[in-house]
Length: 243
Image (cartoon, rainbow, N blue to C red; front, side, top):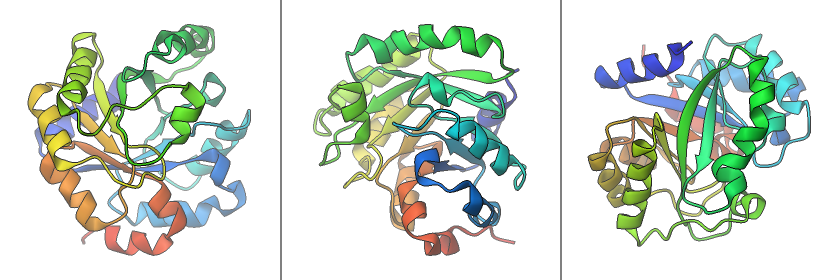
């Protein structure tokens, strides 16, 4: 199945703005998820991403089952490890951390996941994951033992993203990291977008409507927000659908 990826491509062709809310199973209570999902349903969200750097076994699967009860939105796995693979989701971002040089996160974890993926109906979407320095160490750095690319080295970021495309990735995900001090800059987004022929996802450090608009205007096809919405439910008021 390639439904979700095809829909992303079709939406971009129509110049629709795609928006994903990232839910971290380790920070989210299953008992309170209905209230959070109701806010997502009333927002401009087009997708729900689920995942985190460190999540207890089976927590992801239980959370997704509960989310499915309250929303028709597609649920896409954004996994930090193979323990977060759940057949109850609709798709999986098959993330390769191409900004780092740790073989475990370039290909090792992917090899380990094959046996588990064989027993699922997940739509697997190869995704080049590019971590960009944001001003503080992120959980991705700690878990993967990799360094982000300097935000000042735009050419390296561009070349890394393009290399991902040439390797056959279907998406590029520019990430500043969970709870980032600074989001990905306009110059970086614009420069990367100019070189790509595949969809561009941008996430990390976006806490205001202005920053969200800036990401779209700079060339992001899909923007992801997680921490800002976890910490401040009132942000949803600014993200309501227009009727």
